[in-house]
Image (cartoon, rainbow over all chains, first blue to last red; front, top):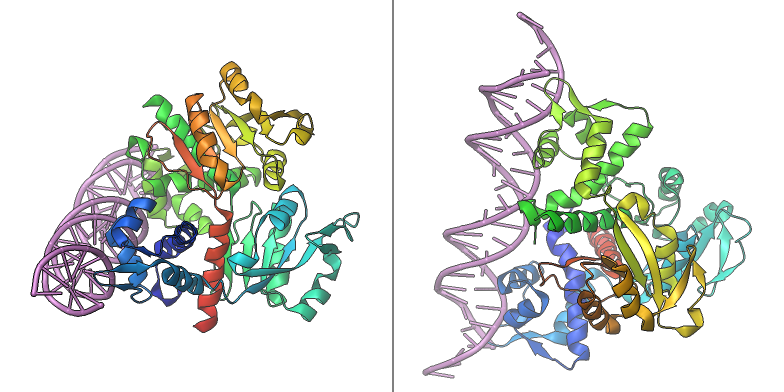
Length: 212
Length: 212
DNA sequence: TAGATTGTTAATCGATTAACAATC
DNA sequence: TAGATTGTTAATCGATTAACAATC
């Protein structure tokens, strides 16, 4: 599951480091120690140093870390400077919001196509792109070789469309459908986003606090 | 952070159990062993039994688990049968999609108000509700006592609105803004949803696979 | 009863924290 | 040089897995 032996816990913290470093940079902070960063982020200094040292030392003894340098390094580790091409499938409420709301460019992606199976939507412009018919997916992929697909489609069609796309060379999925795309194929990266799960987790916490 | 001493890892798995049990029920499966469930979900039987036994034994030796009973128990643990009232703030692309796309009722919530500060949106109907002006938030909360706020607002306003809402008795946040709401107050439950982080994680995995 | 499978205790594994020598 | 703070090793803590007695 983890390439290079970097643990999942570390990987999941990287984007958060990146965001905080961006903020620090924008606030004019140019230098920070692990202790200060730990305080800001609610972590321990030890953990921060361990995390960064998975990728080699970016700091300097007695000084700390250069904010801008560290930010750039983490950006590079996250692959933000070598964007992957992506297509989005399913332009319902959610798909439309994802297409319009996400800043793909700053997150390491380039959105190159938007698809829906509903013919009445085809041709409509979203994010400066015409919605295409799902029936043209094969053709489009053979020509443009998108690396990632963003799935905003119903649970029922997810398995099938994912398989089709894998056949067309897609290497990763950002999956918003209620279906749990499995990580069985080691060549395929999957990131499932389950709103419902997130909301139920909140429900649990609220309820357990009531009774305590 | 964890009430009752139930670990975060366990809590995060509960909604997933719930979804799989729903699916099993809908497929007509009425009984399942931890071994079978483990296989279906990609976990170990041991972990499943450990998880369930945090809340008391729901199984029967030599038989396994009754799917519908287990589903109901987990639903009860998640608090799905005692809904919390919620308001949503910020009706941009994302807020609108969340309002229209999420099935709050089946996730333990009831949406009772939608707000935006943009006066041009006020009065518009979303999910059978008129969008209200953020200027009427105080009044509304004093009258209706929402327990949870869903924040789909810009980073900059998050801290301030969250504080205002805590003052008005709000006990939990489902936060979609790019701001990391801190969990410092033990009476307040926070669930941050960071799309950008999720997407960057995918970017990392794609990139690390390229080089390997 | 015999077979199956849980609930639960013990063992292992991995992640976080603490400590400290290296070094800027 | 003295003070600060990293990089890194060792200790601790927690979560997962294995094992097995209890029991349906």
